[in-house]
Image (cartoon, rainbow, N blue to C red):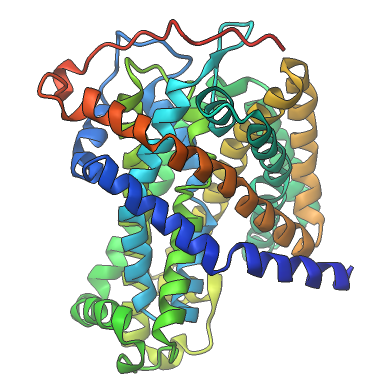
Length: 464
């Protein structure tokens, strides 16, 4: 097993290596250019996310789709991933995470546009979409759609289920002394109660959970920034200076090279916001929206919250805490580094962080359950839904009590495999994305109050 894990780790290092990073960043830049810097419409997307669209067809509201996507996206990567990036690449890695998120908003816009444009209807009248349908219906490359669905359907059980459940069990055991099996049983039951009701049940929970959990975590970060107020200017300076000259930062930070700093920030940024991975558009496809671009703007705003806000605040908290207390923070990595920073809040700091870790991880389990389900529906039809939901619920318990080094590495590799066909769709259909952006966003009669109506009549009936 150790040899197999080493083999998978070696493959993982290749698929998430320079080629993948260049391809993802290149796609971000391409779509930023082709959509005429759609990022300029970020606050329009935020406003649209809380504006119900009464003239739309779909299964759930735009905000519900955004909340479900954020449930899968805002996870332990926002807490542990940022700390890992800072520990590996220094404070400058925070800048590259932020920069990657800013560019990635265009890719997220493109993914959601294609997901809605090429979605189909199931026999029960629900909408199904995502990169697999864009590849099949848009590019005529069904085999790539099948590959994407296979990678998603398998990877979800690892990165979106077992790994998250294990994080919850470890956190609860470490903080409250609760045995992992007990946490696993409770988590299995509450997860089953939610996902057995389908996307409408998942989205209802996420609509309530995401604003609360993210808001509490953001509040905790803001409080620490106030406590560390005297060190915030130095933290900003270290982040900017470290992005281009890590060795000049000093102050107890890792002596990374510029290449290591960029790689740490870009790779963790891509992993955190999932732009280019192809997962979030699966839920965007079922959103009630009057045209593809409207939901795409809403989806794009998710990257703003995930990376531009949450990751940046986490980075400021970590860097300012290290500058304030280099001795106390020395040697801390990952979750322990974030825990060390949150100790600045008397009494409740560790509890706030533990609550954040638990809810972030559980919301990821819920969001990814829908991604995995839709992947299997694409492969074998709607008959797979009930068996998948039961299997997903049981695997939550297994994840809580299992050792997961191999699972993590395999799932991480499959995530990279998901990204490749998704980027084929994005690049191959970039002209379609640009056309949709022009028609529904940039044309003068497409302002927010009067976005053009789009008929979804061309969505075919799923025959499986």
